[in-house]
Image (cartoon, rainbow, N blue to C red; front, side):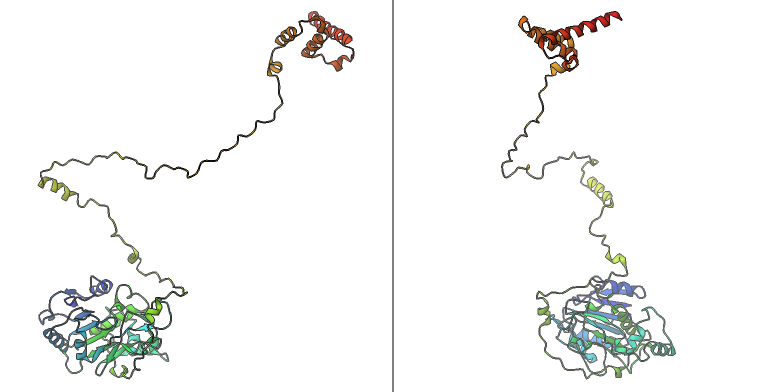
Length: 432
């Protein structure tokens, strides 16, 4: 059984930041959350206790219980955060010093940009101290025990002539450094591209003499609680590193060589406040984070919902309140103008009317009236006998007798010829 402690106000647990880690552990082990004080009865059946960034102090009795629990073959995983034990009421260092590990009051930063913009999100590519981590990263958390010959062959095949410190690259966000003394050993270091340079960031302690029920008491201290949090556990190879550390804590055929964990790391050097400098405006391009393999993590279905689950409870509430239940009716909507009417801020322009088209003037009555009507009108106009020639020419024009056809120039002769032509046409009509 694995217990995630929340009795000291831990910032990371199964319901906050460690949901993915808790789900991975529940697939193979029984996981519980402890909200009470740590007692031997509570830790009796516990194989692994996880403590992540506690905000209050452990009592002296609880420290003794934890020491006896590890000495009795139990495993303990401790996660810290940047600045070490920042909480004023936290005494986490008193617990870790029992195993030769101290949490420094520092913050690990990366001096150059690489994939992650914020300097506290350090990408470490050469920070593996124990070669066993590179060998076991290919093994899932629920794997069975492997033979010693298989492990040696795997190490020979994968790391023959290769620097084992480059075997795993991981992200170390919002973390601090550690101070490691024998018999504890260093598991991970800050590498050569982070400050402080080449300092321990994860360490392990393992009991040597006492073995209870075939298990050794083991402790792992990591300086970053966010390293295996929901936001970072699937970045780079953090998930493979998580499998190796928890398999070591659960005694699943993973062990580390204390002689490989160096203790002669370089001294801490003071550097400029890179975190404050990073907040200044500067031209840079931030690469997009890769899409997660589990697409369901991108879906959010708890923002809103539409269901009828509470309808029976509402109807039952009517009965308890002695209120007659009436079915819902359609409410007639009232449409209101959401904005005031549109009104121009200036007077509209006065447009000039276009001029009428230039058309020739025609007497429509003259063009479309009957010949008889036209002859009557022309007769009324020439009532005087002095204009008889003009009258005969006008009637000839109405009847279609053209002057060019007649071929005369004198008015008297023209009139006679028009009358002659009219008599000919009348005679021709009467003849037929």
